[in-house]
Image (cartoon, one colour):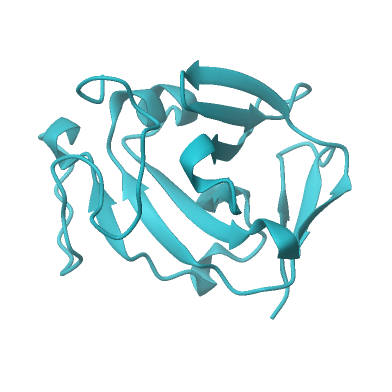
Length: 143
């Protein structure tokens, strides 16, 4: 199955030729700041099946273990790259051309979830990181 996406202005585009490994709603403060939203959904694709088809994101080191990618022209949040998950590229759900196709697996960093954002789903919830994958993207307490 093919998945495509990119930034708001179209300068950066990508294609994945494998289905997502997983998708996760992250409620940490860094994801809020990076996205400007109440939480950020990361969709994980195998790096071997992922290519940039136009441009590439500019990267910002947001912690000792992670970098976030964004379009230098329009500022769109595009990717997350964690050293411990170097077999994949995590794209922001909102950057996908057809985000409706994605099904999330869980919520992480619910310890930092905004109290006025009720999420009424049956997905597993983790106060910090998910038990499904290792992560060291955040130093400390998710702030």
